[in-house]
Image 1: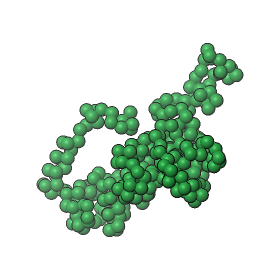
Image 2 (image 1 turned 60 degrees about the vertical axis):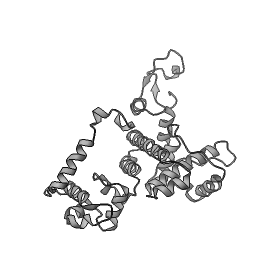
Image 3 (image 1 turned 30 degrees about the vertical axis):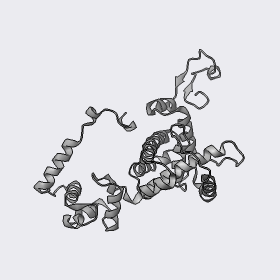
Image 4 (image 1 turned 90 degrees about the vertical axis):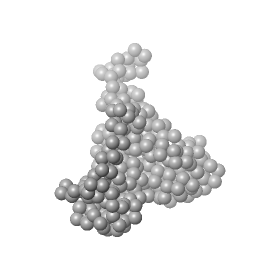
Length: 276
């Protein structure tokens, strides 16, 4: 911990390795404690932040979170290796960590991390969920677990960026939202609406409703005609984007019923890492 800058021994740092040394947590160490992540994960995320440059793509962040011990990576099947080797050749420059030597014992671990990162990259690129599960050989629960842990680690990375690379700070909230909803960056505004997920957001986008402003200007009947939206959700969307819009009685009753079914967070208890 001392060598990684998480604790210090005020005034006598050369004694930090002594058993009875009076160690104090650094700001890095305190943030690590608050974030509930493995110290090794914190070091990995720190190193990724330090190597970040604006030209790096989303895959670099996906691999960074998968390179931590807090992420349970996917098993590397025999026929995966050739595919992963090709991805290393094609997209290795996007990563925030150097690629281990082919003969290194760490290379197979790296490929396992990369396989998991590619699943997350496909998720935030809006690949069809069923196709993604089939291609990766995992179940829905496995995917959702990776997404939830990935979102938490991206949040941790964002918090650490205040210490190690402030240029990353505005980038990481977008990555967190993309991870949560499984969307490309152009849908970030639409998925902020209640009742609108990755599929409905893309349906709205394809019909030309690409922003909150355009939704506010749109007639509710036009929204209701879109596949996956319907009259009730169209009114719910309009009520969120236009403070002057008034839902009809049926929609209001449906909204009240939906609110009653939502259990308050205090009663529900902690169900996700973000409930800490």
